[in-house]
Length: 234
Image 1: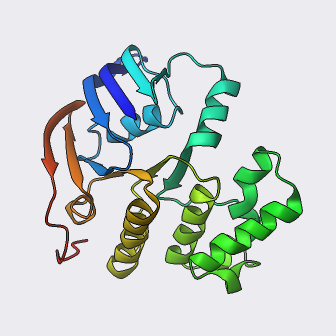
Image 2 (image 1 turned 120 degrees about the horizontal axis):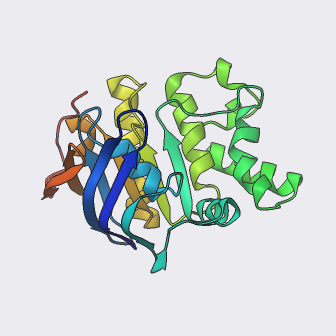
């Protein structure tokens, strides 16, 4: 599903910063993987390239066999809206829209009528235990509730891939565990391909595969066959 071959990325400036240095990686449909590395390792840049939010300088990125290179913003937005759901550490909810309106937003960009998208948003909020909070603004929600709203927004379009950038970074241990279990359920019950970027080992080892990145280079890739019963470490 995701194929990267020799991806390089340099940010130009007074002193050019070579962030990704030949990343080659395959992620299959239905996998639940984490990309783990310290701050500055290149993991967020890699996620931005996977999400077609940023371009790369050299190499190939194939998504479902289609080359993702120098796309127009319209084409890139179309791929993102149809294929990819995003979850961010800072939730990225619109502060003046309530939970239902935030969840419904991706359907607005797909041209779905207001009545239908709001009805679907309520269904997804109910599924995540938040129906009674549908008409509350983000400022009236806890961190865990905000992240569940963000997850509902990410999955309402039935994307093939979920990209989660430090999804538990702003949450306490108990809520982090709940969010990771939600992601795991989406992977196991609905077959969604999920990629989690994190610097926390307790998050990474809740996924099936851990890809370690350091200084813009992929190091070891671990298959994690012992998720069951592992303690959650924050």
